[in-house]
Image 1 (spheres, each protein chain N blue to C red):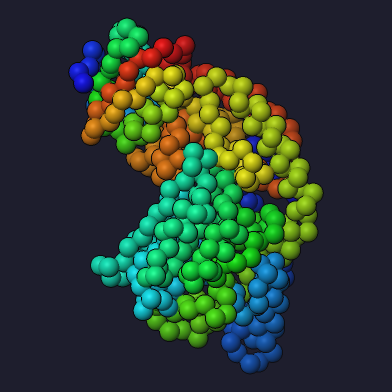
Image 2 (cartoon, chains in turn blue, brown):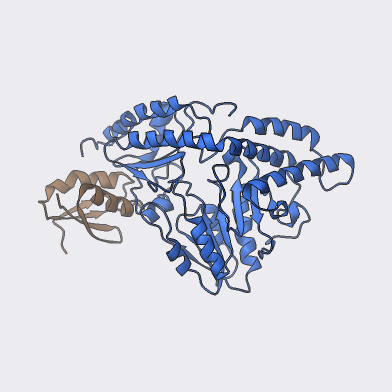
Length: 383
Length: 72
């Protein structure tokens, strides 16, 4: 690792600070790769070479061919394009889709916005840990199922989904599986078996503005928008060459360090889970075994999620919440609801790569007092 | 099923309905039934989770009403 993340920043699942390798690559690529990569003169060829090299590097990390990878402007846009393109490409097969009830809203919203009144989606339920059952997922596949979507791991509670098992069943049924790998790329091997895959560079320390849309050769994906010769026919508009180059550099750097760093983060997360579990009336969320090593989620009874975030912010900690009692939403997180989990006082702690172990220890000192204070303000002490 | 006590938390935001329920459940004897009225969207999952955590029994939910039997 190069720089350490800012002290108290424990929201890696939202984004990570720019990796030093990405910063260097970005600067170099703005100098050398600013020209139009579609042009045949020298500066254009240099930009094209940088873009193609970065694309090869990302493809190698995903375990696919370079010509299967394109770079939309975000993970969200990648998800929108993946869903719409698969639905369009397989509209003769049918208008049915299968997904899990705990997908990212980018996937769920894209599924809802498919054209046609006959477009339907089966959202397969999850267990109390937020994990789908491959058999239940397979049972939802029908002859008219155009596409299936499953996340690699859940972004709110960290539960890792049985992607390999689901991919096998989808392949058996001839249904292309879109894997939302936004939380998993760069942290370990990408499970094979996906027909399409989406990810987001800023989650692995790349710059914002770079998503990943990978579609396997032979998978029927049809551009849902106007034709455009850019972005390998999948993503419209002038390519963000410096951004893509920096994203590839960050991915190479985090993957090279992943074996050691992910084990270190998992150890810290275990320490966090053990400490959080000692706070009265706090429920740990997510699968005890199949979970992201760097993410710890929990809900606190009799606690207002927003008030708790503010207490933690005052103590210097940046974490996020899926509670409805936070400013951004009136409804509780659809993920916590699908799990049947306690939604109030919800906190997600996700450790950025390079996090100082002292931050974790300090968080465990601050948390019980912050929870106690919020309960006291609500008149809920001792209930 | 008739309730022994009605706790009206209509219009209150999470986590207040659950706090109100916790405050008042002691007013019915063990085995008694409380009807919580709560229209906050988080009330459904949170009443169920609270019952699990406190060992009470969620008898049923209909609209904005939750019937809880005091079991401890």
